[in-house]
Image (cartoon, rainbow, N blue to C red; front, side):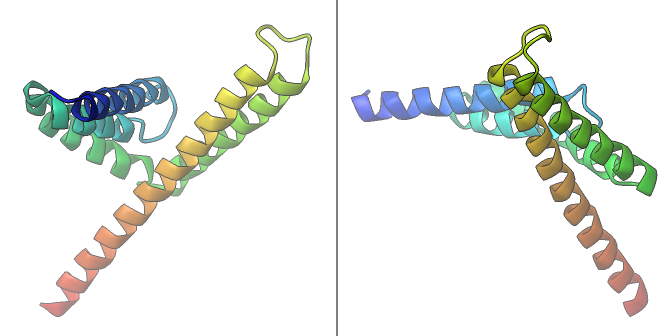
Length: 142
């Protein structure tokens, strides 16, 4: 195995592990954190074929979670409020020195979590909206 192949394998492993870890951390948020778990598994399965057996069950759950997260205006509002709360907490933790673990390392991780939440929420909303439009067009074409 050449140096280039080893470096590529290490890079893919690290990227997949980071996606998987961030996805697991986002599971506690009211958003589609399973999507990042799925992305991490897909990246890791490209180098480790034994992981492919976990991809389909996680894909099914991730797509269901993505649809559920934007299934009603109340859920969307809850997710947006959670994202805004994370953003605000990140700013507060970055600027207020009297808080435990204060500083921009904690603050920036909270802000990054809110950005990821908003990105996944937007992706889920677009995906579900396009499915609904396709379903509506198919039912009116009959």
